[in-house]
Length: 81
Image 1 (cartoon, rainbow, N blue to C red):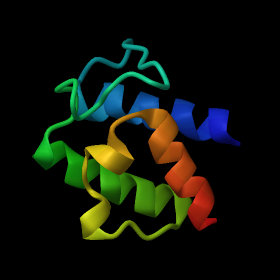
Image 2 (cartoon, rainbow, N blue to C red):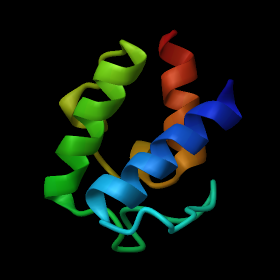
Image 3 (cartoon, rainbow, N blue to C red):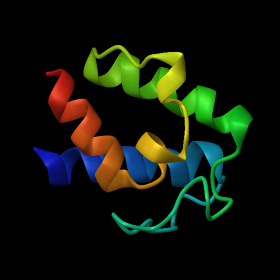
């Protein structure tokens, strides 16, 4: 399931946030600290995750500690299921 989550979120970020649907985001590529996701897109990403995976993301979790890579984000989603 983790690979599927990583793929789905990676495709969403590439297509919707970066407007580059052909970009392939690696599981451990830094999203926030690498400048790919900014504070505005972070909120959109959190809403996508909540709606897609029916999990609750606390506002205090919207940071580079939990959202900086697809792997970290996938682990957070899996822990909430």
